[in-house]
Image (cartoon, rainbow, N blue to C red; front, side):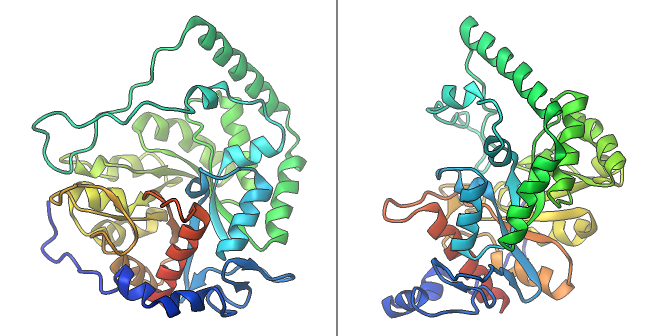
Length: 358
């Protein structure tokens, strides 16, 4: 499943980074690199970030900073440090900042088991086996049940004014929230209603969830009710013969997609623009990442931007040239070296995108 016209990226990381002098210059020049607001790595008092390059809105999913301390104030700080002004916000950062009960599963999965390896003889680039949760002890099960009761009560009792106060914090910092990832398909109806109300109060276009027919059928009516979108994220589904967005779209016009271009390319080897061109009017956002293809060793593996095979330049320029209002979000998944950190790497990815678009 390899696109005959697969593009070779003309902007390699080596070419982008250039000499040591060029790298040093990034930390010294007050740029219009992120509009008129940012000196790279520093927050300029009284200014706001701007990561709209050539008409294409570059942002990030705040999952990219999962290794850092979370919470609303920290997310705002990371956005300011990277020059990012548009985000897909992980809902936990909002709820934690507002005093939600702590999820005991976070501690239980603090040291998760190693990812399962593909079965012997599996084709290169095939999706990995599904992750299986470990069996919980009776005590752990009781602790989880207690948390689920408490978090439900907390959500249903939370005044919407508290969410509006959070939005004001982002607005004052010049940061827009285009999606909130609640992943609420397994929640009670009351909690799903809360998720859409909260997302609307935060200024988002919709609530995101992982793609599945049951989840689509569950969330679509709530999206319609609130005049919003139910936005579904893809992983390796397109590597399954015959997979299509069409059956999901037929459920409701409120069903939209967060197309993961890296997962798509890594598992199929097909140019992501084939999907973007066909479904652009049903795609709210795209997760941008670099990967190897399914026939490379190692196959379907996250890479530093410019060191993989995903045609990042083609994707971004296609959206720019077509003028489609699709959010392009950095999803940092490659290994961060000990001498760097996720905030620095997101900033570098944003620079990379800018070099393509401007």
